[in-house]
Length: 374
Image 1 (cartoon, helix red, strand yellow):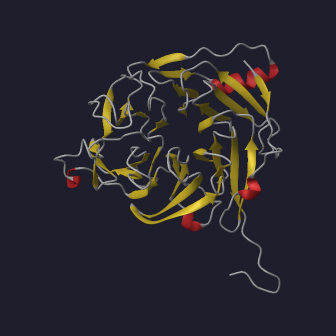
Image 2 (tube, one colour):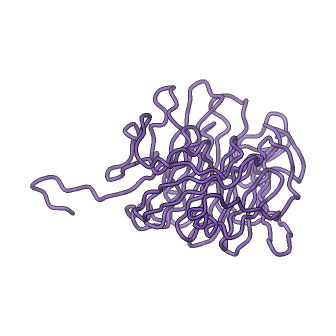
Image 3 (spheres, rainbow, N blue to C red):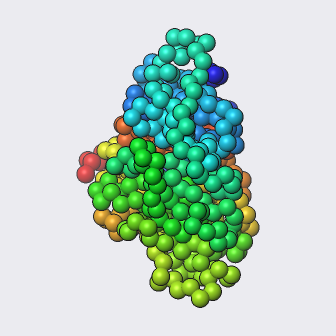
């Protein structure tokens, strides 16, 4: 197992001064040296785990001196197939490797022991489930545990646009005890982010729209599962109201679940989280942060930011840029891939282009001299 010194401080390519945030917010490099950082998960003792898509590695990040800044990066696993999706549950780390789910038990205890014994061999994973499609096109996963302990797994379409049948384009729930699966949502082209509403416990998820219909359609989506098993349109209807030129013939938009928000074409909406903390101002409470990875085939680039969706209960009341600046003109400085709230209420942002994780914090802006705060 490789131990890599972590760089929590700014580096020579620190671009945090280019990131625009609302007043009172600041951004810093939380940890560096995590190539292709994708989904993040937080352990019980504060350990941060990070998956990757291209590197085949899963990382563990430790804060050794309890100063709130991580010090070391461990490579927990390597040579896995696109282990982008990870989740922490009951002391174990779960990793999605395209067609299988692996479990690394007592992973935090292992990290602590590794500090005292650098030669300690890596943990051997347990095979949890291996009945998933093996196609790599949209085959990387995003994992999270539902409030009831069921593991949710998206299975993307094995193509840009096709009707691949009932084994693809969906989100399923996996019972870890019985290994039984059930359909949560159908007609989902490629979801790489989801979370549950803190009050209603309904699942909300991002979905990437198809390519090759031009710059401006179809839109990526933010969806809500009001009824389990609902069909969200793919490959027949896109963005709730746009029939596909080939597969949409004879299909009616009203027969499918429309998105709660159209996020924009080609923004590549990936990881998302409801904000449950107390650090940020009240308007952010129980809203949704979304990492927009950014376009790859648009004539002018879009995305490359973190957006915020404000909610009133289950009703969307606003969509706005929260953190932007990873795109400067047509120059890409980074690609947000996931967002994760820390216990103190600050927000982590994984950047798979720079191979790092940022932290966004809030401090009440000081009143101007000679004025009284509200």
